[in-house]
Image 1: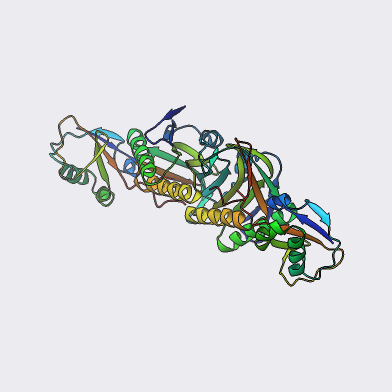
Image 2 (image 1 turned 90 degrees about the horizontal axis):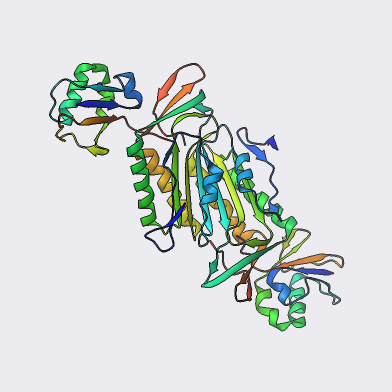
Amino acid sequence: MKIQVFAVLKDYFDKEFELGAEVGDIASLQSELVRLNPSAKGILQLCRFAVYDEFVDNDFRIEKNDTICIFPPSSGG
Amino acid sequence: MKIQVFAVLKDYFDKEFELGAEVGDIASLQSELVRLNPSAKGILQLCRFAVYDEFVDNDFRIEKNDTICIFPPSSGG
Amino acid sequence: MIQSAYSPQAVEVEVAAISAEPLDVAGLFALAHHPEAGAVVLFSGEVRNHNNGMAVDYLEYEAHESMAIKMIGSIVDDAKKKWPLNIAVAQHRTGKVSVGETAVIVITATAHRSEAYAANEYIIHRIKHEAPIWKCEYFSDGTKLWGGNCNC
Amino acid sequence: MIQSAYSPQAVEVEVAAISAEPLDVAGLFALAHHPEAGAVVLFSGEVRNHNNGMAVDYLEYEAHESMAIKMIGSIVDDAKKKWPLNIAVAQHRTGKVSVGETAVIVITATAHRSEAYAANEYIIHRIKHEAPIWKCEYFSDGTKLWGGNCNC
């Protein structure tokens, strides 16, 4: 699966990367990312996740070829 | 004294005219104008009066050389 | 065009409160910026093509100019006392105004948007109800009507 | 540029919800007129020179563009369901935005001004809180800060 991160998350991860580990849902993806970079734990807890331009919940089942976008809290304007 | 009228009052009086009659205050001016044109009675009751760019009350004492402006209810915009 | 004023963060933008020429909305907006103001709200009151079911050709606005200028200035000053505005300007057209043209414009700029909206609405409400400015509507059927209620 | 839409009195003004180019405020305002709309309200969210006591050089806005476009469109549609708007448009800038430049603009036009103000404030509030758009502030001392609270 492919991961795209935005805004402040780019201080913790590459903007776009392939995740090798097998993760079944958003909750496990979150744990895996915290394992990769423990200092991102706080911000990751505030993030929203989106697949195919739709927000998804923690129990969303991730397919192998999905691209998961991770959004920190937004504050445009 | 000189009288200036605005907006719909111009359908009842000249825009600007000299009033020959002696009237001592705004209330008597109002009566005199109703006497000159009884059909203006309704609208005159809703009007505000101004002298030297200030609104004045019914008991304002009019001096001989004053110019009195008469304003129908306004509704700009 | 810009002078310092009584409040440290306010600037006085010199705009004639009454104009017999078409209002330059883009030009007024260009003046109404301030490095401390993150929110700018602009209201444009425009002539509609219908009122009370009658087709409108155009309006004509008449003002007691010196009093209207004084009153609009004092309404804007009152708004500056109620809200921490960096900029507040208002201008009302007189004379013949066609459908779609701007008859009155109010611009407020301040740090926080809720105050820019509130001050803007306050200023236009008071101008419409208090300033000695009257409209005469000329309808397509040849009739006309002075005053009446606010159109917007 | 103007098409008929679901509501008899509404027009659909085609405006890209996200723009990497400077926003053309005067051009958008010129589009946002309607013969039945007596009240036009324009909000411009601009970059301030200070935030939390720090001198700001410029901002950079990043968006998830396709989702931001979809969400801004749906927020504008929700506003059209809540209020009888003749016109509602919103556009957000991305990329580097300098102090004093417009980062986001919302225009609403309708017959009665209270509805134009309310709908305008509703749209900008939801865009700021819901759309996937982030700002990064670059300060004069060389530091930067992502996100944080709304600036206005």
